[in-house]
Amino acid sequence: MESYDIIIIGAGPAGLNAAKILGDAGRKVLLLEKNPEIGPKICAGGLTRKSIRYLNLPEEIIDYKYNKIVFNSPHFRSSIKFDDIFFYTVDRKNLGQWQLEKINRNFVDVRKNTHVIRIEKDHIITKENQKIGFNYLIGADGSNSIVRRHLKLKTRLAGVAIQYKIPLGTFKDFEIFMHSKFFNAWYSWIFPHKDHISIGYGYPQKLFSPIRAQKKFEQWARSKNINLENAVREAFLINCDYRGFRFGNIFLSGDSAGMASGFTGEGIYQALVSGEDIAKIILDKNHRPKKIRSAVREKRIHEAMLFLVICSSFFRDLVFDSITLLVRVKLFGKTLIRILS
Ligand SMILES: Cc1cc2nc3c(=O)[nH]c(=O)nc-3n(C[C@H](O)[C@H](O)[C@H](O)COP(=O)(O)OP(=O)(O)OC[C@H]3O[C@@H](n4cnc5c(N)ncnc54)[C@H](O)[C@@H]3O)c2cc1C
Image 1 (tube, rainbow, N blue to C red):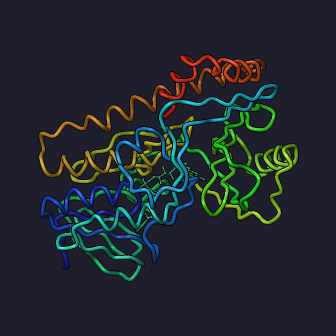
Image 2 (cartoon, rainbow, N blue to C red; image 1 turned 90 degrees about the horizontal axis):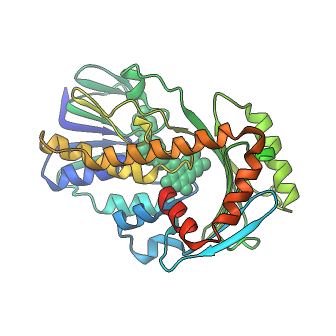
């Protein structure tokens, strides 16, 4: 049986980052991706402050940079500007290709079009019935992870995020809309890109019916004169149910580990840093996963904030209005952006 020291399933931000670090250290790695292309993923492509610092992206990868955000609530609209850039938009294909270029291909074999359909104790099985052995397995296969299912971990906290890609022209700003009538305790976003504008929303998978959520969103879009007729509609799960990342010689990273924020839906940063920490633990068993721990701590803070918003019940729009007014006070605005990004 063909065999590798480390197999990584999934070439998203988590898998690509883990592969880079392991390949740079001269470990024999096999990176498996079911899609024919590395990078494309249903995602609004928003990178916050911490991802920007972490990635140090070249200009050509960035669609737009923002030092301004517009908050919208039922009765108010506040536009706040900071000294520093704190938000980028990127195309996921470009991000994936850029990460791929950085991988040391002398040590990392990348196989596209390779769908892993089963996992056994010491080998994986692909759709083509190929068996490949491993010493370590990294699950970087996203929110619908086969590795997570193999570990029999439950996923109770998952969100569905939906985006409409609309043609350029209508919006130029990075905007957030909070309105309980349409989005309950969550929000809708506008993230402009070079070739489209991503407009979307999210909701917890177990609490709301997709049809009802879609109807509400379309109602909201009509109220804002947003034409969704020619828009491309895309939806995917975001797993937020973190239950650990190490299970013997099997690891879970990024969305497969449930590391995304249940409040903001951000998951790219968590994927990158969990890929890094896991790779470093494989290289050095004494490595302390400080970045994973800090990302999980931040995720818990986000989810506590979400819990407060949910508890505000009938007063939720009052909370949203207050936030939208309070962000005009620089210290409050800065602190909120720091917590959320
Ligand atoms: C609509 C939407 C908008 C979002 N917007 C943002 C945003 O603006 N900012 C942000 O930070 N996050 C956002 N997210 C979340 C973000 O997309 C994820 O958190 C992030 O992509 C997780 O990275 P990952 O590497 O863990 O997994 P993924 O990026 O999902 O990568 C997993 C890879 O594994 C592959 N794979 C899966 N199963 C198998 C298999 N069996 N065999 C082989 N390959 C497999 C997949 O094809 C994929 O390439 C959004 C999510 C959605 C759904």
